[in-house]
Image (cartoon, rainbow, N blue to C red; front, side, top):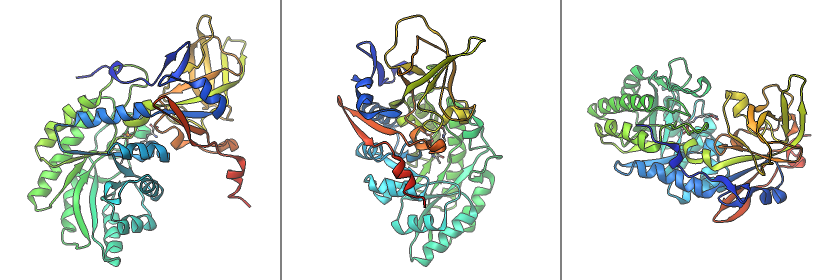
Length: 421
Ligand code: LLP
């Protein structure tokens, strides 16, 4: 069932004794772009998108890239050009999607706690589907749509009480989580609103979590969703799709995990029971492997117990995942020095003890000014960065077909202070 990740395209590989992105020297990029900088491989994004699309080729499907993973305009535009549609989680992401060229009809709007303004915008723009999180939200959507003389296309997000077996902070399908409507209540919520003229129920939605690395929770989620869709269709709801959300994990630690073909193989037999087109909302699996955060070592030190620290100019402000979830990212020197590996703690400069990228990592000799790459950070890296400690948001670079360009310039202190009096 589980396929090996070594078949997946790896954009960050050594070339000529140093780490390169699609063969382009990282050292030469950051000589001009500075550090910290995110570098992305367009090829890796294209291949990851195609892998998912191909895996579902035998079943009618639409990929709605989850912008929350990385919504830098150039990345969003790249996905749009590949034929992807969009999953937006806020008014800001809807606006970015539109600026990137996604048609309103190709955008689904998900998210707990949509504001009145966001709903008004989504309804009047005629978004493809609003995935409602509660009965109350459906009623607010109906009232707004009616006031504008519109019919809102909606689906209800159900919470199936399935353990995604991922990190607790990114598991969303348990009854203790805030997401969606309990599965057993969903039919009643649809039925009670079947005659509301301002609502058109076009689908059912589920998303049980992120960084899911086994197929069973995904298959069970599909099974629950399809069973609900069958019941609703029997009761006369003219559903157009079932939305399975995102969640497909990537192999951060290099161990084999499920691939898009495993995922498709597990859920398509369930989907065939209802036959409706499936909406997929992958984020991480599309962009995760395509990005690396490049930082420069600003200090090294050794404690009496032998623990060695390499302090980078990048920290939890640029990449929050390790501090927030204890998540693992491979760390590699960009130009490895000769000499045996020893254990290093690779840390950031932020005044928090959780500001650690990796502990006890076996690395070759490291010195001040060396460049270090933190891999598999294309998803939820830049998108979650902050100005804590007045760190400036990092630059972002896209490598495409042997050339590179800055797709987001580094923030300046003037950019930050422009908002303040
Ligand atoms: N659809 C919905 C409704 C979601 O909430 C999410 C992610 C996705 C799709 C995309 O899931 P993906 O395919 O990327 O797993 N910051 C965390 C991940 C949070 C995921 C939130 N929702 C991290 O860095 O691991």
